[in-house]
Image 1: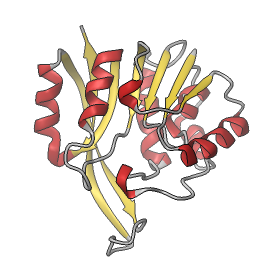
Image 2: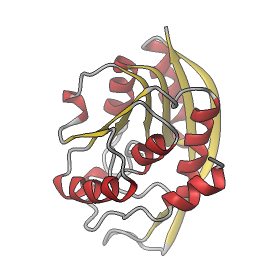
Image 3: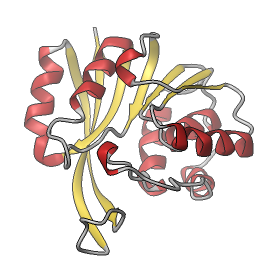
Length: 200
């Protein structure tokens, strides 16, 4: 599958019906999601691999991994309303190898080959992305993790402290649309950094 085709398919994924600011729920843009997924695919980190999608939301990374030939995907999502939309999306794409785990990511302890995640950027709660990063470092061999670029130095320090080796860095302009009552502008673009990390 070509990256553009994947992006077009991901465009049709149903989004959050009632996003919650406490969890900083934003839909990862299909252009960014498809780029991250394709990088993982080209690095042989998806096909026939077991994938963890921590904070899966409505499933853009889980479905993308399924479409790119993952053996098994664990979609870990705490929000029951998001899980209902995720279930609809999985049926639409016939992703029978995706298992939804409706729990806090800190309670998820299954080892996986690869984690692909876009955790909260920490705009509402400082370092809200840290539990996601530490859990990924605990359970995965390879990690693709997206963070606010302003926290890059802190995040990289935590990765190294926990035995990770950063192999790739890639920056994106991540659009945050007007979603919550405290948003003032229609769209704000935040610089985000993707890190590919290997353990061991």
